[in-house]
Image (cartoon, rainbow, N blue to C red; front, side, top):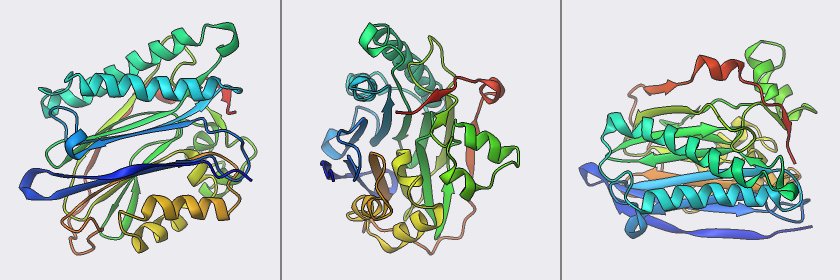
Length: 299
């Protein structure tokens, strides 16, 4: 039984309209695996990148031995370097989404080049990134890690999984619950570093007080259902949500590494159930990405 836990400090910052943004993250090896191939990044508060209120990243490496860990770490390190250098400090709202797409494409080149070494050939990683700026979130995404938004007691998945089972769900061949336990659930169709080029999904939505944004690796959603995730988030504060979600995954077996990062908008850092305004999510997912197929068995 392995319980190698890495917790990141809770960070707090002020954003537009004087609302507070609370961010937190945690990654754990789980109950079965002996090492952690996930990497996470949160930047907020005094650590916020220039021009950005908060940055959240989850990367789930693959490739066996130490290669998966290398791929995910290369990914978050490159992203951190780009943000902290001020590369996005002057980006407008219209420019930021395109800039995030370009960023993940450059990360892909870094990981792909490093993966040409014999002992790391075939390594790759998922990457789900959320940047928050002026009460607005922007995401970029490759793989089957996820971004969720909890608003008005409703949980919305912002990203599409790039996986074989998700393709079957969209085709009507599998239910969501069947996909979660299917033998091919770890087969992904897109990842950072597997090929010289990658298609990146991007999207954005406005944030309000009480919103909670959560990113996770598939070690969470493969162990517990969206309904269980929803119930934990509704019952948790931002200070305990990551820990309680990982605990729930471990109680269900903890078969994989599990990483969770979260950001909560509001004075008390708790989800607010009072606002009934409709969620408006804009997502740009390339049609080419729908037919893109890099079949790679995870870990």
